[in-house]
Every structure is written in C-alpha cells, then in structure tokens.
Image (cartoon, rainbow, N blue to C red; front, side, top):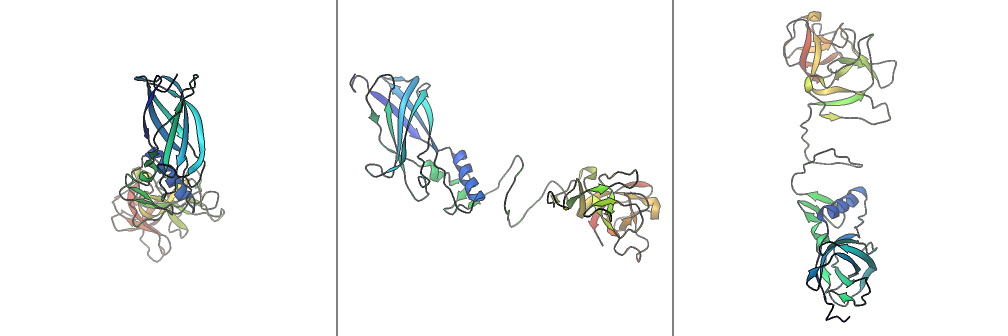
Length: 319
C-alpha cells in the first residue's frame, strides 16, 4: 500500500507538565548545590488515519535535535509502541542526556510514525520546538535561575506540612497557630500529680535535661509552664530529636500561656502581679516576698483570680 492510499494525518503538540517540571527543578535546586536538570518530558499527540481518529497501537520514534532542520541529535532515539484512544496518546521521552534541557539551550523534537500491523511506510513530522521546560522555570510566581536557586515572587499557601532538610531563611516570619516559644521536655510527676498543660514545672536534678512538676514555693529551679492549656498552642517549638533537647511535653519559656494558679496560697492575683511556684503542685501564686522571689519568677499575670484555684493568662518570662 503506497503513501497516497494510506496517508496518515498527525495533529500533534509537545508539552511539558508544568507542575511536574517545576517540582523536579525545585527539588534539585533545594537538595543539592549543583543543579541537575530533568531529562524526561511528556509528549502528547492525536493520530487520524483516512479521516478517522485511530483506536489501537501505533509505533512512535522520538528523537531530540539542537536545530529546526539539520543540526545534531541530542541523546538517544526512543522507539515505543503507544495505544491510541480516540486518536490520543501520551508517551514519556527521556533522551538520557543530562544536558538535554539546560536553560540556555533550545531543543526540537522529531516524531516518526508507523503502524505496527504490517505497514512499512514511515512518516516523519516537522520538528517541534520545545518551549514547556523553560516556561516551567518561571511559572505561577516561581523563578529558578541557572544556579538552581528558587525565588517565590508572591505568597506561598500550603495545605499541609512543610519539611526542609537544610536552612530556611526569610526576612520576616509570622506564626498564626500559637503564641509562645516552647521546648519539649520529659516531665516527671510530683507524687500522684501528673504533668498536664498549664502546670508549672521545674528542673529535675536527678535527670539530665528533664523537668518535674514544681511542688514548692519560690522554687529557684522553676523552668516554665507547660503549653497548650485553654486551646493556646506553642507557636514555635525548639527541639533536636534523639538528644537531651527532646521530650513529650512542650514547655513555654517565652510568650502567653494559660497557667494553673492558687490564689489561696498568697492572695488574689491581679494583672501585672509577678508569679512564682506555690506549695500546690503544678500551680503558680502571686509573689509577696520579693527578696525570696529572685530567680524564682515565672512571669506576669495578665488576668485575675480572686480566690481558689484556676487558670490565669501569663506572660512568661523567667527572672
């Protein structure tokens, strides 16, 4: 069968998945000092034969070039058989050349088509300039330079967690999920009183790097307040897993937290009162003996407690 009686029309387009390419470029630039450009891209096409869209298998040969005509081949030719549905097919092409898509190079892709059902004719289509990869270096406000550094031109909104294996540097950081700076500690109980959010804690002399529920007045080993009471969470947690700088209870040393207090231990608590540990395990009380409070102050009260035991909002600041 000659080419006239079996003519193949091939409407084609070359694309690079912007999301996938951007993710690859960013991953390379953030993880290594030397940028490694991806060499795989996606080619999508639509095949029609004798005026009808093809459903079935078609043999496709793909070759990368450095010029629209003539020029030099880049990497290896890829031969593959694709399955068309309503003429559409998708194939991944990897020229296996690390410099194939360097940012200062222009590339063209050449597609050769043949049916694998006994036909011998080959149809080579005009080369198509690849433009998707460069666009992915500056898309949706993300720019990646030749050195592999990424610049975000506008805001970044994440729907989940962000993990970084290296340094994170910024001009300003606003934290909206909490109001204190905390460090995680292992906290021992005071008798039967088990550590809980809002309790006052002190240094545990028997366990390196650990704390205990405070249980005496004007304790100069006082170390902070367990964060998380009344729905106010730590805003920033400082930790190092597998060392003494780790634990399971976040203890606030700076910021605002709710704290258990005992107003019967030394009188009603008013905003501005200095607070210290009390005889009631895990509870703070108002400072009345300022000489004795040196080194035992937890912070300042920001709310009232006229009597009994209850929660007081505290501006934590060890003194």
